[in-house]
Image (cartoon, rainbow, N blue to C red):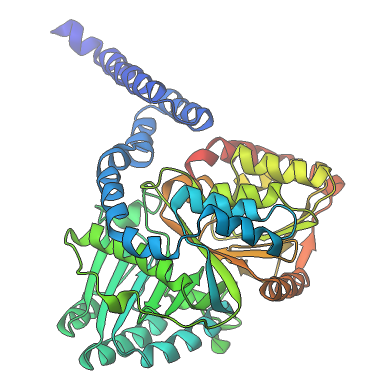
Length: 487
């Protein structure tokens, strides 16, 4: 007994590394991405106890293997009927090729083959710059709703803007409009009073995958990062703007609050049906009950505009990294330019290589990222990639006016994408994300004008100056990059 007491810490250490050895073996045998596996093994070995906590809270994929596999089986049965009506056959895609420049048809084929996502025509698309424009437009449309309203948000707060939204929703519920809300349990902050009020109005509102101590687990795996609204199955909203005062640039807060630059889309047309399907799939999943699919959810729609749209959704329940692969394909098939705006740039090797290679063969690549951002570790991790980009001729710009939160791309004046997906591993592989890919030269022209206007609030980074930044910054970047696959 004395021997054990005298050597208790040695026994604990041996026991700990026995657990580490078993855990490492489990991780290696699952053949996950090598960079991520190495980062996890590094954490397990050099950070006693903390490493295991990181692993079990942030890196485990047991829910993906079990829960989301069940969800995937259900998904296909639910949406097959209406997708079969919209999906293009090979002969239709061949006919479509003459409308596309260069290899853009490859992007259409990829999304259709990856996810059976219809290429829809006759859509009307409105670009909504910043939260104030998004909420002004959204509130007006909500007040005109007649049958149903569906909302799915990563951040839903019962603050000033959130209360205005809740007021409208309760009014519509009392008029007999069916309202369903899905909110992420970790990202959102809805008061019990607000929840009680919505429930009393007959609004169906459910959290996405509740967890213990959400304030201590802001990055807990498998969060619903989407921001979508569907009204009567005819109008859809998709983009980066959450329901929070943080996303609205109130004039009276100009001196006290960081300026927030964001982007959202309003869509009318068949593209809304894809957004509707994704909402219903997730809502059924979190409520553990099957919603009766009504014709009102997928109504007959007359052409509303001239834009073609594909909606790409990705997450732990999809077979492929749909949005990442679409972005990868868009970069690789670019003929002239790729302009990107993203708040978090922590790319995987595929996207980084695609950008650097495209730049070196003469494609103009411009990337806008925030100078400061809202995450210190993410900012330093992002900075660790900048030197390689600059060396390859990629133009990188720091947005200095405030926080740029828009997640957009415009390619060759033909294709644009706006949605919730950041250029990082968390968006590519862990969170539930959704993007609209818009094939319309007029929308691309408007997106280009917005991008160029944002450049006026940016400072371009210079390779020589960047190399000469303080060595302490380089150390922070190197350490932060070790965690890049987990951020």
